[in-house]
Length: 453
Ligand code: NGQ
Ligand code: ZN
Image 1 (spheres, rainbow, N blue to C red):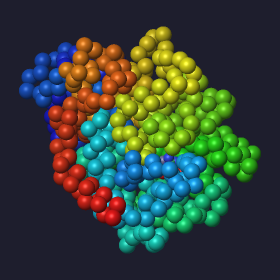
Image 2 (cartoon, protein in one colour; image 1 turned 45 degrees about the vertical axis):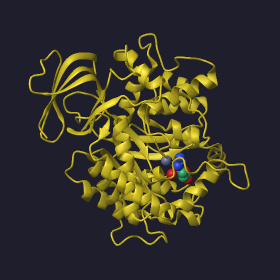
Image 3 (cartoon, protein in one colour; image 1 turned 90 degrees about the vertical axis):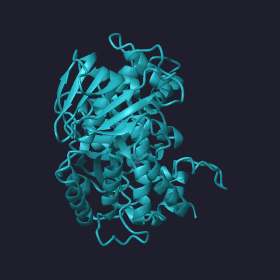
Image 4 (cartoon, rainbow, N blue to C red; image 1 turned 120 degrees about the vertical axis):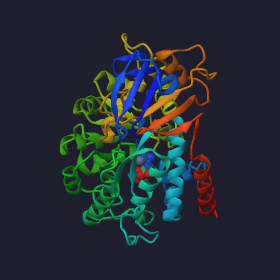
């Protein structure tokens, strides 16, 4: 893997720099970064190079549903909960081959848009009738294989799903493929660790699905395991009501007061918080895992970004159900939903950071890296060599540079100005196309024909 890249401009931790030489070690980690260097024999990236964005929340199989679950149901009154029923019917169809093919296509699309890592919140564990596969980690391994094929970095988060409502309600029939006790869950974690051992492109963490799916005892046990810990929290008003009725506290408040929530934790969505929860989640050092296009698609609500940022809160981006697959689109949705609610502009800015594109991009890199539990999110020695070159001759970006170019990428147009993507030192996207895009798309096409048959 040892190699050298040269960037005409690169976004470094200290800011934009010119003529930057980036040297890698054999494992695909950055060894040295030297601005003001001649290109020499290095591979030249003549555009603006930014750190690859970590994607902190994915259910890869849902890529096969994206755009296909928009129809009104006969009863009307469609919601997150009716979408979930559709998802439960669809999830029954996936074979391991389908799951791998769909995940590989998703990971290609993420790379082509500038995501270079994915935290896979993985709960599609068992056969359609709920029986574990001969290898209980079969499905986890399929996702690891898809990540290797596409060349994206991964934080594999095996998910514990045990119940169908807070705390200990019986599971729903559509949840059969997800269910484990702590022992079954431990076998899947062990399989995921074995499949990824010694590979710097991977990390393993844990994911209690939500307060609807595990008990406080299970949460305590999982908090004692290694790696990042991710949980869905307070996405829908109904969850807040049920948690209040069961515990007397709102979900984010319950987590903050009952669990050792700190930098290891990532609360996915955290949409419905009161002002005190916003401030206290920010103070905890945990990451809010925001999935703006999915949250919009599912009618979840709008995250309390101004108060959260003012309190020093950390966030990262997930694409969750994959109706969007681009970091720029997620950031646009995040900022513009604040504008719609507050009748304001340039929300995620400060006097010393007047560009929302840059402010949001920096914050999402830092939060995404923290929640991924891998050395990501900066072009600096010791970090993975995850580089995204933006083509500054693309019509979307022409005439813009540096922070203003990030604003243009995030806030205008539909085109994709990502030209080259390097992930863990390997060039995976060239001239805007993933190098294995055609073969992976063929596999995805075959899987879609089976799934829709
Ligand atoms: C999921 N997705 O686990 O895929 C969930 C739906 C649930 C989102 N929350 C299922 N966006 O939360 O029960
Ligand atoms: Zn999710």
